[in-house]
Image (tube, rainbow, N blue to C red; front, side):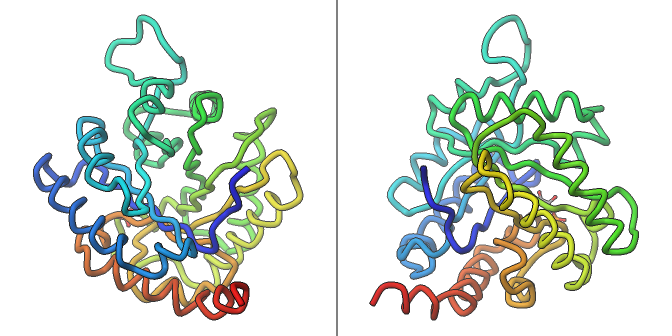
Length: 261
Ligand SMILES: O=C[C@H](O)COP(=O)(O)O
């Protein structure tokens, strides 16, 4: 079993970039990661989720840089007559380590509900992919209410499953917004999710990261309640990703140095 890194930084490109833009962006991210001490020391794990057609070339571009690759979705089934779907087995075969499931946009725009999300999470685990399982309340509410709702959602979606998961806490109202949820809100919900995960040996190696208009300047405020960030728009500029890796190093680097002596 792989030990969880101190910080996990995931980036979903959603459908924002064209193919060549994606490859150029990936080259810049690979160059940053390949020389950044947060990544080279193993303190931070960086993964990118491009569109399906870019997975193979991006995997080749980032090879050796420490950056891992995953898909933004996967089929609930592993093979068969499922036109337009891409299976977890196929994703694993082409070098993916991650598969995102349950994103609010897939729920809202493509009608995916808990049953489908749970089945896709199971498909990811079954095929050796780490699910990036998105959870989070629909409407703005108190942080305690959000924590209770989100932990209940996670419990529902992971019922009967075993394996390491990256839980992406994404309050749906904070996605695509000008700014993230408040620091107190994020810390409360991420801490509750982390406590829930930590108490269950079947999810050993699991982590909780925050997404929803996250960008530079946020990680340092979250302390150790969140295990990292799930970035969208604010990772389109590779310089912002480098800044976030600097912040990860500042937050956890001293502890890592202490552990290595
Ligand atoms: O997948 C990423 C999240 O939905 C966050 O996206 P955003 O930072 O553009 O709001």
